[in-house]
Image 1 (cartoon, one colour):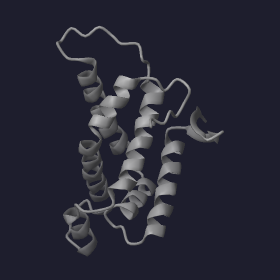
Image 2 (cartoon, helix red, strand yellow; image 1 turned 120 degrees about the horizontal axis):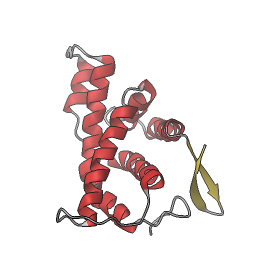
Image 3 (spheres, one colour; image 1 turned 60 degrees about the vertical axis):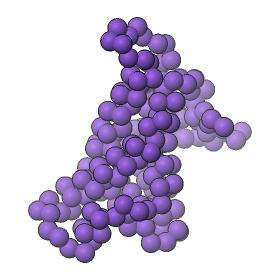
Length: 167
């Protein structure tokens, strides 16, 4: 079932592009998270136990990152969700164009978010430095709230439906 985050969330080609790229871009989000951690906390790249764990970890609960990925997908669709297709003259399909645009946008989003300690710490707690389910859930909630605040959006739940609103 497709969950609409706002009444005009009808750009189905964009949603399909985001869905097709989900696993690849989740990996990219984690890669960018590691870069952000290095920039913020270890710019000299001195190897200690925590830094080594962050760099060497590739196994973590992907569902938590998936939730953040989908939140960023919804924000992008809200901000760039015009479902009026433009004329393409370069031989690409609209799906390919949306995939390219979305890939560039999410990398920009996570790099912009990566300069904030709150984002980096909460993402690390729920992924690479995962220790307990309760801490990961706490981190996830704080991360989602931070992202909504950063993009100046509110998520309002009414009658069982989630809706994005400009804050």
